[in-house]
Length: 249
Image (cartoon, rainbow, N blue to C red; front, side):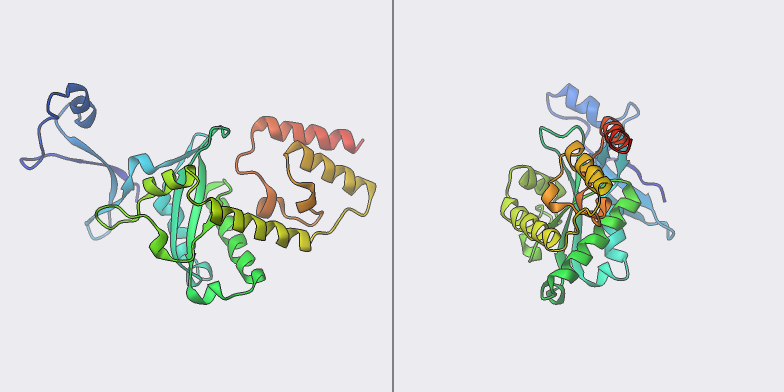
C-alpha cells in the first residue's frame, strides 16, 4: 500500500486563516481541499489508516524514508520483536552533517535489560543490520530503560518532533555517552590487531581516511556493523579507494 497525503473537505472544515492569506494558500489546494499534513493509506478492508506526518519523513542523501515503516521492521522481527517493547524512529541533524540522520530509539523488555553485554550487543547489531538492509543507511541507536521517558503529544501519542528536538538539544547526552562508552569498551576488549604489514597499512588507511578511532577498530571488525559512519560521501569513498591502492602497490 502506497501512502498518500491526507486532505479533507466539507462543512466542518474551516475556510481560511484569519487575516493570513499566505497561510491559507499554503494550507488549501486550489480546489479547496485542506492539507492536513498527515499521511494515510486505505487498507485491504477499505479503512483509512493514519500512518504519520509528512514533515516526519526522513530524507537521507535525497532518499526519503517513512519512520513507521522503519519501526515496523524490528518490531515485527521474530527475535528483535521479543526483546523490545517499543521502537521509535526519528530524524535529526547537526550543523556539521550534510544530510539528515536516523535514530532508532528502543525500550528493551525487562528480561532483556538483565541480559549480559554480549546479548545486548547482539540485539543492537541485529537492529542496525536490519535497518541498513531496509534503508541503506546506518542508524544511531538510543536505548531507554523505561517507556515513560518518551515524550508524548497532547493526544497521548509519542511525539517524533519532540524526540528530535530533545536529541538535537542534548537531552539524551547522558544516555548516549553511557552507550558509546559501553560499546567502545566492548570493541576494545575483543580487538584483533594486524599481524602483517599489509593488514596494518590497510587498517591505517581505513581509519585515517574515515576519521575512525584506530584503538576501537581491529582487523575482524565488521565496518557496517560497528564503525561505518552514518553517511559516506562519494568523495570519502574515492579517497578510501585511492588510499588502499597507494598502500597496496
